Length: 155
Image 1 (cartoon, helix red, strand yellow):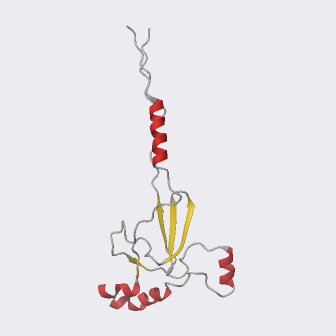
Image 2: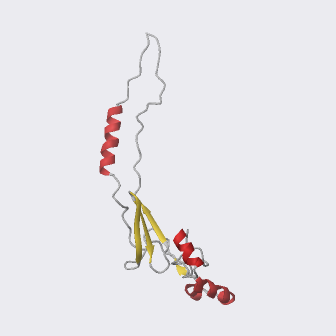
Image 3: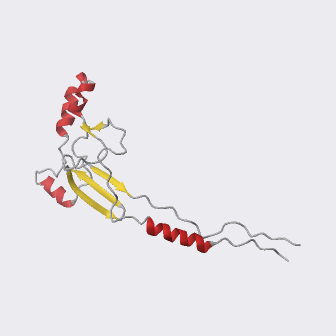
């Protein structure tokens, strides 16, 4: 006669997962931390023209018509200055050739805010259109499946 292993309380695990999902359900959009939060500080960068991101058909038509799309050339002066100034670049002059890349967007400098799906927020700054993305963490889930092999034996 075989002996069965006791069943795990799957109902309790599912109830706990449901309760956690209700408490930790993602908001309509992720909370936005203050400017500079989670940033080690001191980061700077510069991109050549055309590195603003993916262009759509309307922006291609605008370009073909002789006008640059938004944020297509706004870093060009920094980039050009870097090419000319690199032989004499010092720590004090870095800010003249590279833009501040601190994580986040300063208050009052928000160009747009989009929420592509629940729990995700993308904010772009006015000056360069640089995106900062935030996401609400997804809670872990319990597995309702018991992967242990059943015990068998005789008495």
